Amino acid sequence: MHLRLKPNPGNAMAKHDKLQGAIDELSALRSVSDPALLSAKLSAAIKQNNGILVARAIKIVRERKIESIIETLPAVFDRFIDNGAKTDPGCGVKNEIVRALLDRPERCEELYVNGTQLIQMEGGYGPPTDTAAELRGLCAMGLVCIASRQSMRAVTSLLFDPQKTTRQMAVKCAITAGSDAAALLLRAKTLAGDTESEITGDALAGIMQIEKTQGLTFVQQFLFSDDESLAESAALAIGELRSPEAFDLLSELNDDVLMSRLRGALLLAMALTRDGRAVDLMIRTIEKEHIALASDAVRAAAIYRGDETIRDRVTQAVRARRDAGLIVEWEDAIKSARA
Figure 1 (cartoon, rainbow, N blue to C red):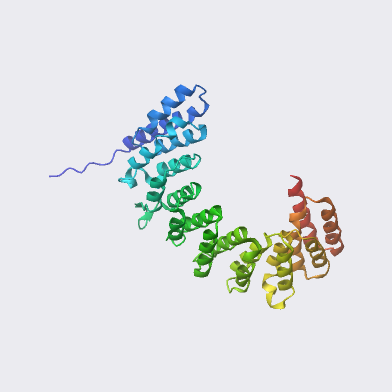
Figure 2 (figure 1 turned 90 degrees about the horizontal axis):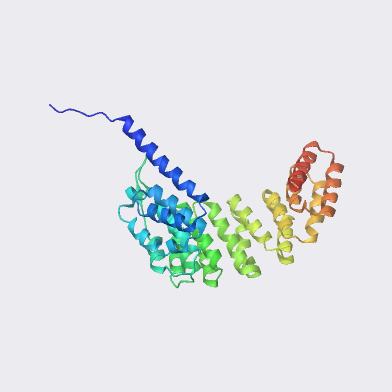
């Protein structure tokens, strides 16, 4: 006869209380002013096997910039790779280590390269999930920060990673690198597309940020995309260039009746150029166009709300239109500027 032991909820509660107590003790260390005592306490915490506690301790180390402990973190990283799903669920320890190392000039190239390739599958309510998505992106950023020759190789792979978070971070890495090679990678990414149009939109913005006017011809082709959100992203990316050339291009498209579905985005993009002609266009639109487009113009003009002269012009145009909705929308924008 086999006896079946029932789980003891009291034991689970005791473990939870013990862990919470340890977390509270670590949190209290943030107010410790004695450097020697703080370092000793955190060093002891990092030697533990509980990933939650170790991650909390490393975060404090990073916040307090305790260099003597940060120097030891690459070895801690290695300790939490094996059987990471159990020792470091969610990759909390490894993520905090990389964040701490990113603030330092030391070359941790091998750690970063290994991190960009790490996959950590963990069970949950559904199928196992990869919890190392953010870690791969952080490590790629590490390679970029130390100008490693491996950085663009890593970014290339991560731009096509299965995880959305990783792909988003790979785009940020390319933008941070800011090199011709990085811009070419972003071009390749936009041409290949992504299941998440916002990632392609971020890549378009990155191209304009790196290439400036040289990127105009490439990015403008996405203004005609069947994906409306992608077309809007292309317009805003061009607007962020803040140049007369960008305004001219957007203004020409704004006059094209075939682009009417993008008029709101184009108005905002032209406002972003900070070209003086944009203000005149916002005023004319508020005064004469249909209410829906006038509302788009009010939202676009809101980026100028800090300029008293422009704000007064927009206010007069909105009041002259005598539409309660427009008046409320503009007044809300003014309030947010004064808050």
